Length: 262
Image: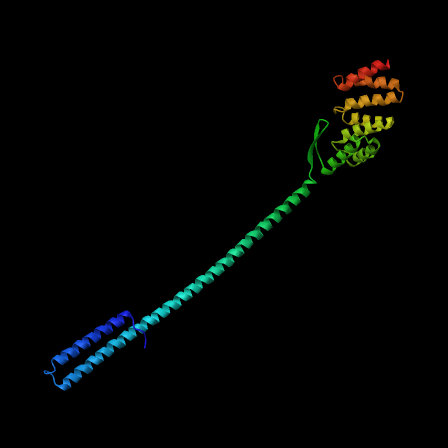
């Protein structure tokens, strides 16, 4: 038998109470009714009680079924919630992985772009300023001139000469040209190769007479002539220096040398 709900139990209690009242009334009025009528009344009362009990049981059964259906619905809903939570966690993990992958891709792309830019800059002309002149130079051109100058500054004059000579051959139109001729001449002067030194000093003057190193180049030619015992030629060179570059520092030194040559 199904368990009765509280409403069913209340209805059943009421039906039994009415039945008891009916029995009491029947006993009290036994004199008024004959035995046949009393039996019919009792049967009728029993039927009514049974009907109420059945109704209560049916109500309890429906309530139980409703409760079971509700429980199943709640379980199904809970399962759906757990499934959604699992899918959300999975998607969150995928999003985090995608974010990491994207960040890594962007980092690699940035490194590639920087690498390409760096390699391109190795071939792009750069602005340089040497001996009061500003001009554009290829990276390799700048590198080779500075390498020759580094050897010269170390006092390795013999080793510096082929570096300057090679530079002048490979970069004939370079803005470094006048400076390379000047320092090549000085390296040759330091190794007592006076004739070759004069050739390069004169090449500088012919190429760039207004170059800031030209007055020094003229003075250096005179020094080479003095070392070669060409006093007449040295005097002429010093006089030309005073005429061409009277305001230069080299002109001051030229006056001193002329005074010693007389």
